[in-house]
Length: 136
Image (cartoon, rainbow, N blue to C red; front, side, top):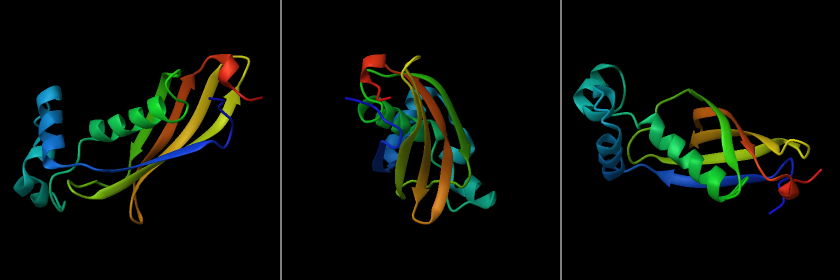
């Protein structure tokens, strides 16, 4: 696979109650905002908020399986959570390559997670890819 500026990938996802329980078991994070609907509502939310780590797992899938792909290694991720994502709410992660350095093998990208018109999160990534897989 040759990686070029402008390459993009998208992944649609919905986080289920089972996903939330699996992440709780894996992470040990039982924060009330992610586990207790009554508490979340008392804080002004519609319900429990999806773990940011689950959204990062979706980003990991896009980076590792789509762009830059299976031969890339992540170096840096930045993310800004803007609005809550709720369990059962459809979301879409879109990633676009913004810079490619054939000399260093570094690929920069930007991404956003949307749920309808709502921007849930956005950020940037940097990966290193074997130089022979990069377009000049």
